[in-house]
Image 1 (cartoon, one colour):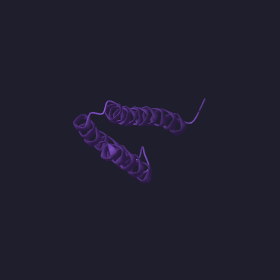
Image 2 (image 1 turned 45 degrees about the vertical axis):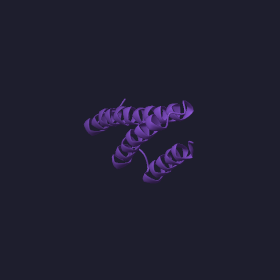
Image 3 (image 1 turned 180 degrees about the vertical axis):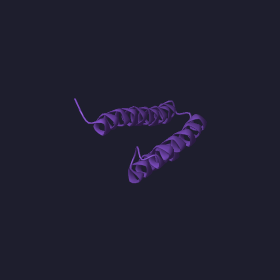
Image 4 (image 1 turned 90 degrees about the horizontal axis):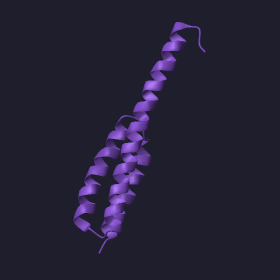
Length: 87
């Protein structure tokens, strides 16, 4: 356990930030799952709506620094490609 006050504060701040990052990542995963579920169900309209929501969620995560911008870009690109491939 840390003895110095600043070290104790760092522990608390890091824990808070880790919890926030975990929540944001979880939200990204959930939105991606919604898109893939709509694709699996072959529902083009639902997939497009879910893709819009997922794109917004992923972009917010990237802007907050939870995801790297290239990772976010790759995820959005792959989802969009999957939705566009639907018949």
